[in-house]
Length: 233
Ligand code: MN
Image (cartoon, rainbow, N blue to C red):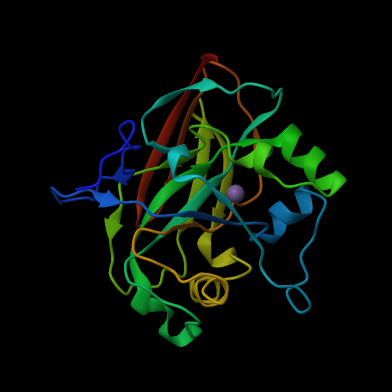
């Protein structure tokens, strides 16, 4: 039996609707600039005919359950919400064809990719890694997972409100790279594994929150996500 110097970190996991067992999380992948209107608001329009999708990752330890209150994070003055459809991988796959991508899908959830926007943009503009802007403690918020094995979501409203005021409203049918294309492309770089989450990108309307704000979001046909911003850490 292996012994450790101290207790190893806990396995990250999420609840699954209607099941007693929790889903153990492996890695957290995020697609960048995957809705045209959001790419434009970031000042970086996407031309799919000549570009490929790109990704960043966050540590699984950043995962936070929907409904939590999180401290306003340190070293930022511009903490942003990004509402996203989260794809849950349920079977291993490498170099998967788009036509076979559904075989890897376990289900979906509604999620938030919380971002220190000031640090992300400073890093972007200096050609530095995005980690300090994106790999923020408690920033990968995810709602209850809905098991939908083999289902490829192609449309459905995606929306977010802060304190009840609508900030983001779009449709998953506006994804630049759709679910099949994301799974196929990401699997060229990584051996996808059960428990990998892929945050598929945010629509336009991202913005800042302050302590005391309450975020609610939903993806039609999938579920809801909520987060409260607490006092600064
Ligand atoms: Mn995002």
